[in-house]
Structures are given as structure tokens and as C-alpha cells.
Length: 115
Length: 111
Image 1 (cartoon, one colour):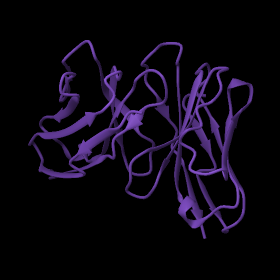
Image 2 (cartoon, rainbow over the protein chains, first blue to last red; image 1 turned 45 degrees about the vertical axis):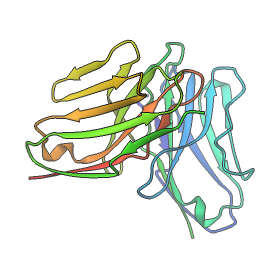
Image 3 (tube, rainbow over the protein chains, first blue to last red; image 1 turned 60 degrees about the horizontal axis):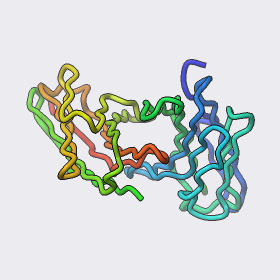
């Protein structure tokens, strides 16, 4: 596609339920990142996929959070047993990481609200 | 790991005035410093970047300066316009992992 696509754009879920957030990166981009942005706050790093390397999971806030990237393309971020503090905008970005220090393109984000 | 601090958190200027946003970083291995602009309801978008081998870069009304010795870099917007109103994020990149972002600056340009 023309850009990074995230779905759904908005998700309201009940506390305790699991949610899956999807990211379709730009075709050919080998690096994929997930960030979380709480209301009025900065971008909190969650996880980073780079080609076939083991992902950098150092930003995941708890074991309720996990992510996978299938076939080096689409990524899914899963949050189990959601809590109210998980409410935020989840942003995905991708980059052509074969070229070092290259632009990261962001999707429009998924706004998650846990009620 | 890298830590990026950004100031101010909010900035209000009159249309036509200049705006300056400053960032500091901790990891001397950082060699790439992009700036992103985020408009309401949208994802961040790159507006300018600078690599460690240069001290200044300009693109029309925006410029970025880098002082590697002091580990700080700044975004300068001249002749501000209402459409410049947005949240701006600086970031540092060591090339070893994902970008580390500053906490953001909400810029409001008053017409």
C-alpha cells in the first residue's frame, strides 16, 4: 500500500478482555516498530522487529503484551486481560532498515479505550 | 540505553515569530536525529532530520542544529504560520534499535 496501515482505527473493550491490533507496513520495509502514546504524552517504545533477527521486546510493559510479525510483513500486537491503564493510542511504524538511519513512517494509530 | 529530553513541553508564539525547540540526548553513539510533527488524530510525520556529520540543516522555514560535543540539538521554525500548530517530537537513533523519542512539544501559533 501507499503507507503504513493500522486497524482498527478505534477499539473500545471491556476490562479483562484480550485485544489484537494490526499493522500493515510499507511493502519492502524490513523494520517495524510499535509505540504507545498515552493522552498528551510522548512516544513510548514497545517492540522492534528487524528482518529475521530476534525482536527487541525491551519496551513491553508487562507479560500481558506480546507481538508477532508473520512472514516479515504484517504485525499483530496482542494485549491480554486489558486494564484501564492500557488505554492509549498504539502507533506502528516501518522503515527500510537495510539503509541505516532512514525515515520511519508511521500509521495513523489505533486508539484503544478500556472501559 | 538512549534517553532524549525535550523542552519546552508547550510553546505559544505569535504568527510570524520564530519558534525553537531543544533536545538533549545521553548516548554518544547516537548518529541520527529526526524531528517529527504530529497533527491531531494523525501519526507523526518526519519533517527534517540531521546526521552526526553535519552541524546544521535547513529546509525552507525549518532548520535543525546539532552540537555533538554538548549532546544537544534544536529545531528552529521561522515565520511561523497557524498550520505549524502541532506536537513536535525529537528523536535519537544509535542504529542499534528503535528510535528513542523526546516527550514532545505542543506548539501553538496564534494568528
